Length: 140
Length: 160
Length: 214
Image 1: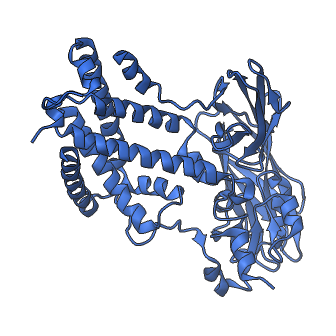
Image 2: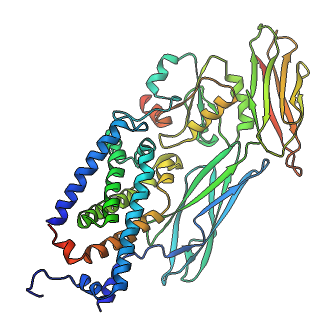
Image 3: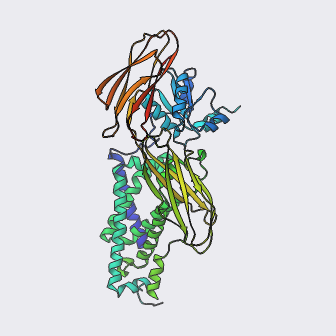
């Protein structure tokens, strides 16, 4: 059992080292919950914004045409130049803009929200869970 | 099988008489040590970002992810040092095999599950897992580990 | 005999990856005005049995991957042509293409397409707005060329005479302040501002900003 005993000792030292690192490392990760992107919002967080919210669909136009959040505006990288003026038709400064795409794994909403922020839309967020999350909560 | 004590393994015997193979073995051991030390240090520099990479595999709940982001590099560091110094080599090799198996399993799982993620985007879980090469590399390392294990010197095998 | 035992440990490499790829990752840079980035991934069936590629799946709707046919005999070569639509994307883009074969469905190949799409200039903001009845004071759009980029800002025009632009050159051709002023804000108006440049010389690009009274 020599090998196992050695492995056990190595484990103990590693645990000790890990403990010290966790205690003092300036870049240690938070323990309870993952760090959140400040621009990410959950569906629940958008509830108080009802009435002053503009939904932006970052998916393709065909997916948008099939179904989308009511009153949402389609805005994606493929057709930005054509769609952005239409977005401006709907947008009023002071509104909260929330971008969504298919699901959590999709990064498009994050990227489109970032592009909107860079364009001058200060209150641009992206929806955690995307269309899937909205659909789940709004089942008829 | 000889009844004498302690018996040398076939592999150890093959090396014992051939200095060139002993040197090759030393180089392989140091190479794996270097690999683990490098891996450990790059992760210990920024555990937060390593935690994000672990999270992308979507295999563990966050608190476990946070613990692993600090524990795994610490273990890699200890293993690397052990192999470099040639002390507690048997114990270190056990961890090498365990770690390589875990990493390969996670990679394979991410690749396989990538097919079912919605949006046609398999998002960052696959893109951060890299290509198939890490998987192949790990399997080669497992083979090398097997060799190192079987060719341990008789002394290391039966020490303390 | 014993040596072969040693060697056999080194050969514990599973025999998948019958398809040998010339390269599995490509990095490309695009020019302003390019509509897409194209990368070709060549492969050869180095095995002794035919291979069937039954699925090529991209990580993003913006990327298509085309394959001429699915079956490749031993020794036969083929290629996957990946096209990533640039659209209005900028900066560093990484897209993946998953290639699965019927023979090895659990071990797909992942090809990567890495594109760097330059952002020749930065506009902040890209639109200005007034409410109907709001005081028609001038609002400013700042346009700055990215450091070192060989592009010159030539001219800024409004397509609507009721919303005027007045350009101050902070640094001629490189940094401009565009002061936008509506004639009045009594009713809704819309103007597209055209920012003309000289780059690239064979296809000089025009960038857009917007002004609205609503």
